[in-house]
Length: 103
Image 1: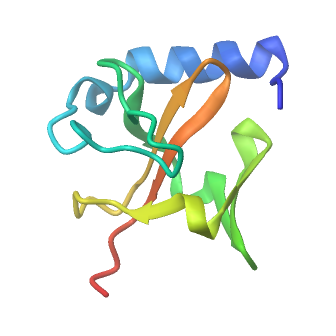
Image 2 (image 1 turned 90 degrees about the vertical axis):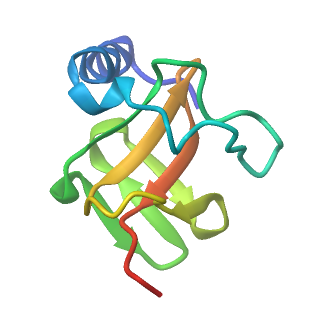
C-alpha cells in the first residue's frame, strides 16, 4: 500500500522529532514475520498516541497512517511505557508493537 506523500511526510517528521525515536535499545535485533529487521537506526519509536490506534477484530487500525496491522503481525512491546510503537520503512509499517498488558 502506497501512502499519500503528505502522510508519509507527517510520519517522517514524527519519527525525526520524537525523543524516543532515537532510543533503539529494545528494538535491536527484532524482526517481523518476514524476517526483516524492525529497525535501521532512526525508524522506530513510541510515536503513536493511544487515541491514534483502534483495536479492531483481527488487528489494529492506525488512523494517522490509514493502515491496518493484523494481529499476527503485532507483538507486545518490550518496554512497559503504555505506548504503541511502530517501525516505519519505505512507506510501510515494518513492525508494530502494542502496549505491554502484562499477560
